[in-house]
Image 1 (cartoon, one colour):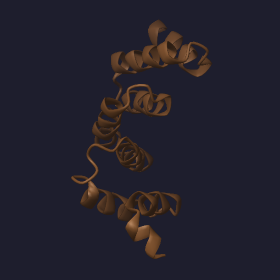
Image 2 (image 1 turned 120 degrees about the vertical axis):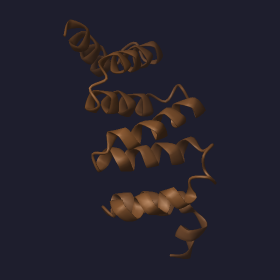
Image 3 (image 1 turned 90 degrees about the horizontal axis):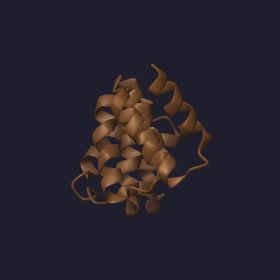
Length: 119
């Protein structure tokens, strides 16, 4: 168990897996200044907020994760979903285009892009 405290990201992931979302949020917030340049940490925190249906709070974490690694399709996909939840169509379209640029065969992004552009 001591290993979890030496590896805070592991503990954060475990809290998430165990459905301890409130604890994950407060634990993550306490680590934020130390891990602000850590893509994985920012992705995890964005995911926590997305899971608890707080897209507005998830977005800055996903945006920071993308600043640290703009070729992560998983982060781009979740960012697209956040923009959709916030009804930000243009931003969602932009994310779809970025995904397709990185992965031209990504049919999910292609289908969503076509749907969004037809609205």
